[in-house]
Image (cartoon, rainbow, N blue to C red; front, side, top):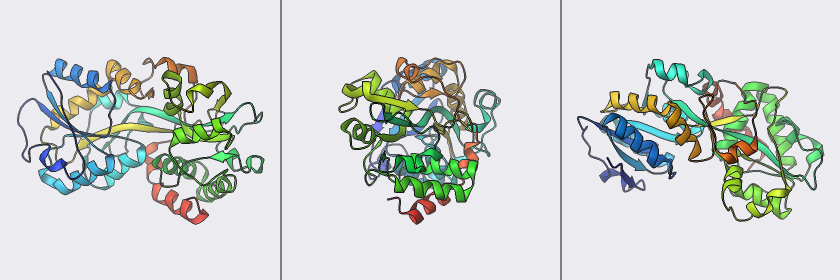
Length: 339
């Protein structure tokens, strides 16, 4: 069978799938993922189940807005996206539903599940510290260290509107309290080498170019440079060191790629089957390998690039609890002038 793929902008989504439910062996998937290895992920599911996947790919915010507009007429069965903040945004928008599944409960660690079982994580990425090991012999060992006077003018990091930073600060609120989180955010602003700009790869390039000595980024951005040619990073790999923060305390912060079942899924049983399939060993390997991430199921193999980053202890905080602090995190960012 062949997965039918439709890439779409928000304006074009209306014609992408039929407005009425399709009976039988089909699954309508709304996804903001776009990795080559996902083709194998979907084709294996189709071969195993006889269910045909009709797929839409678009930006997560576009898909959420589309599902809200479609309401009870939405053909969406499953929503896939990246980062805990977007999963929680989908839940708060009312476009997901709870699901009881013994397979998901057994396979997915509880801290990577929504408290109401409306979303589940299927792969992880750590948000860690990268540094120029030629210039810095005392890199930060914890997130809180980033606010230390020792690193004044040395840090490059993304903007406060970035979902990864929002979730990181939300985790600090959950672990350390709101006041400590505010002090941390102010300290990082004071230590910035430049105004926030660009994506995580741009922070790595800034370290390589000497604009800053420290960058905060997700593991898969650096793993991508280990596995393939990333301009401005791969040719400078020898200068990089990295730290998985908080290894002696809470563990390193992680965020998720994950998904849930649409609130008005016309093919609900097929949707449950698909989520359960994503928790299988083979699917975990495809799902994580597509973006050089870590599987959520213990014991599943990772890519060579991820192996090179090394093992680490992840924060086992309940990410459903972390997600509830995201609005407060954005408020703190605004208060301290984190652009």
